[in-house]
Image (cartoon, rainbow over all chains, first blue to last red; front, side, top):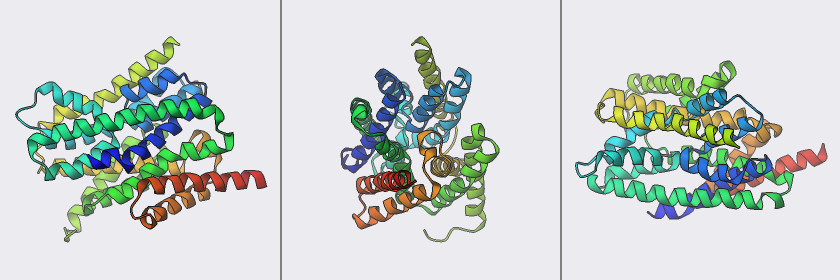
Length: 225
Length: 110
């Protein structure tokens, strides 16, 4: 639990402070910050939703963009669920746990859970998620409330908190050769597909970049990582 | 604002669709299978693609900053991570502060 209560939580709080400040300065009500954190539980998706709403994008366009931004939850859930599976858990527990999956909890659990007894992993994951969720909601509210006292020139740093966090997190938390190749392939494919088709870029970069990474890993053989 | 409630409801439902579908499909894929390996690749690539795109081609307020400033801020943040003995909070603080300072000095000078 140490990593949930330490730096990890402060960093995520900082990201949600940025999100709260962005909402406040953009005329988005405070309840949107809190409710979207609980309901979406995906900072990139929440940013897309709020930004598109502010520029008056059609409802269907916003929903589609958020869905495509969050399509990563399908493979993320598929890969995490087998680790959490244990005969003692009721079926609905998995559907509750699925709502708790976020990038931070996913990367940490993918790394920690294999070293734990199978029956302890769900408790670890839900506990971790509760701490991260509570801190994020508090961060969003604090960010919103202090937004008025932040000069406009400071806001760019706050908005940059989330991207720089995810960027460094991906680089330093990835341990296996396979996932390193996948991160590089996706990182290259992401901007390229955005030029061709912004709405589909997240999904396309994942599918094409991920498949390319799989092929590279497969055909270059596996040296000891 | 009833349309905001509807928007959040639809976005939440659309997001949960992937999570719920993930639970349904996970029982049908063995963790050791090649499909599993491929899906892991897709997940990492998707997240990395989104993050790199936001940094290289942002929308909204970030789009008003320079690409070189954002890249430099990322590099400084990464350097701070290792200099501060693997401290992610220090890394993120340095990255955000660097962009703020670079952008402010550029805006004020221009």
